[in-house]
Length: 158
Image 1 (cartoon, helix red, strand yellow):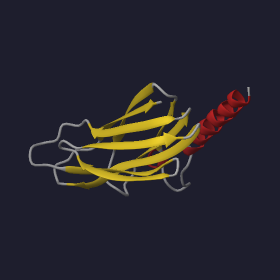
Image 2: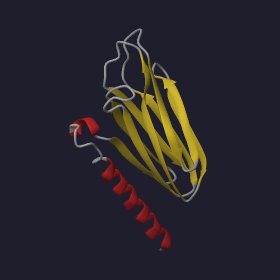
Image 3: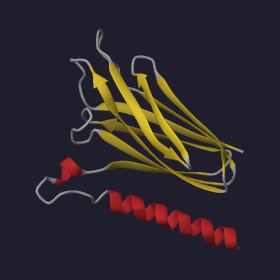
């Protein structure tokens, strides 16, 4: 019973963080320019989830970052794969990155969009773990049309 109450409480806190993150902004800027692009993934062992998101500009621009909140319950290992799903024009290139924390494990990786996939693996997660990952465009050549569509797959194994 204690575990059910504890897990329910953690889910409620995560939901509150997601709800509050969507309302952040400054009074002098239009709401569509400050909207936080965020997703929440909750996983238990032997489950996976795929999300798709878009990046609307390079680092520093409105819509330049996507935030992924993670909540895992149950001990296990976590694998996350992040890749570009936008078809790039010939002669163009894009470098994207992911940075953040999963539990106490720091994460920073980057990849070229023309064939690169970020592969993040964290083993030995405790009974309840949280994480936050930021994904954005680090560098682009001219000729890249925004938005850039991305995909993230999270998989938890026992």
